[in-house]
Length: 408
Image (cartoon, rainbow, N blue to C red; front, side, top):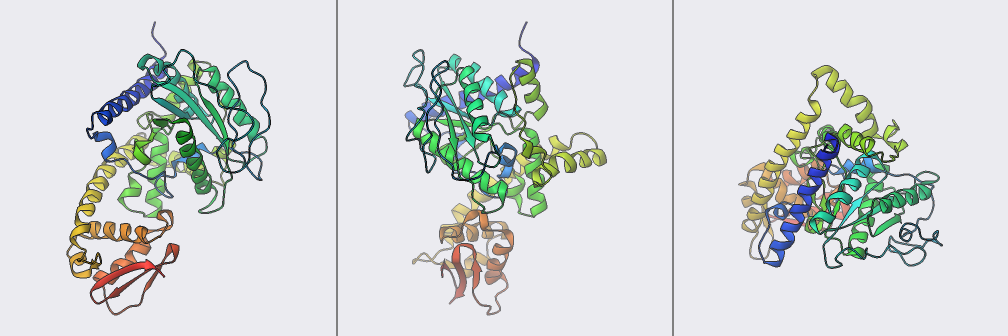
């Protein structure tokens, strides 16, 4: 008798991603390009469209946070003191050493696990599939410092990961700032910690447990912000620097992941923030989407996920077009020529402008459609207007038929 259908589904999803990682590794060693990496975003999930990680916030008490490598292998003694500062271990518990049965030269894949059903299902599937493909499997859990006791919760999650056979395992505490609101700040801190863990461990990839439901929520949030087609494209299956982040479950619904945990008797922790109406994503999950399904019928989540993929294909094509067009609209000195910009289709022109503004120092997460509309008017609605002030103290102005964008 085979595994439960939900377990089989999550294992198949993880198996496919591991095959992709191995194929890319082979292509890289052979000096060949790999299609999966050509459309990958090179930055960690930014503000806005990539805000799906709001469903992954793990709370704990406020105050200074530390990087806390997880304890020794299962059965070893209890941990000592934690380290301090940025998420880089220095004292206290050491990450578990690679298993004697694993090839130390095999690629390492980590799973980011909060202890919730999605990420626990992902961790169990990785632990099952990785050894069969000659891949080492480890895990990272992040303590965000947003509720009392989350340091203990992170330790419990790390222990569960080790019990699944993952190695190395780290529990990393972070300091969550305030920029962009609590969800965005937690997301930024989390991805910074995950990037550091990947570098520290030499991981080929990090698996994230975002599901089709998370994707649908992300599309709706982008639609509400009016942020354009890239925002509507939701989360990419492959993102991050060098395609570091992988999301195997974007075609799997949240209930399938929970059923897989139940079928395997995996303990699951339900983050209270995911049910807190103070958070936009929580309200959308428990009020907005159910209301849409009641009004429009079942299938809204699936339709939104399809919209994300179609939008992503379009956005990728437009980004590629803009990348090629950018060189053609610059003069010999590298300045943007307004007449040549004007001749571009609006969707392409605004992408060129956005890239130029970011290159000048504007934070991508703080740059919104209204900013680009004002810069675009310097091209399409020139009436002698003054300079446009942009995030990051960047200023855009028109001078002698050229668009000058620099920090003021």
